[in-house]
Image (cartoon, rainbow, N blue to C red; front, side):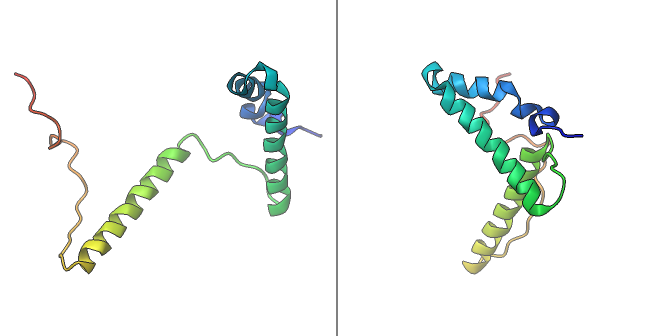
Length: 107
């Protein structure tokens, strides 16, 4: 059974070409088509190069990436402060406490 990449991955269907055509302008519809084809070629190359099946990163990919980035920043700033001579103890933020940057609520 021979399937195309766009059959299994809706973000690569015709909608992506339409979205890029709106972005580039109708006079550049060919450019949008080539951009979409380029994406498909890159995915196909990655699948063949790794000899594995293609998998989506998932709907929470950017949330996971942001959490990893926040953890990286916490470690980096902790090390920077320790290098400057400070003693640092990290504690997770208290989500129930009011944010100190928020103005006082109006009664």
